[in-house]
Length: 65
Image 1 (tube, helix red, strand yellow):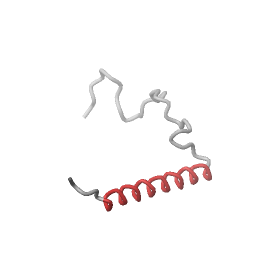
Image 2 (spheres, one colour):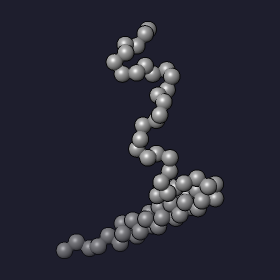
Image 3 (spheres, one colour):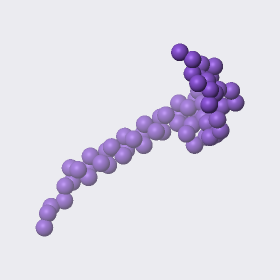
């Protein structure tokens, strides 16, 4: 029977701990600046922009070169 790889388990635990800490700091910074976080809704609601950018022609119109 194989022996457990405690070093691997420890490294995974450390990586998870580091990731959680970074996320916590990011959320804290977002709150401080007043920017909405990933879970706060944000600006992107899945709807397309009201006006397309000026340099992109509308669909079906051939681009001029």
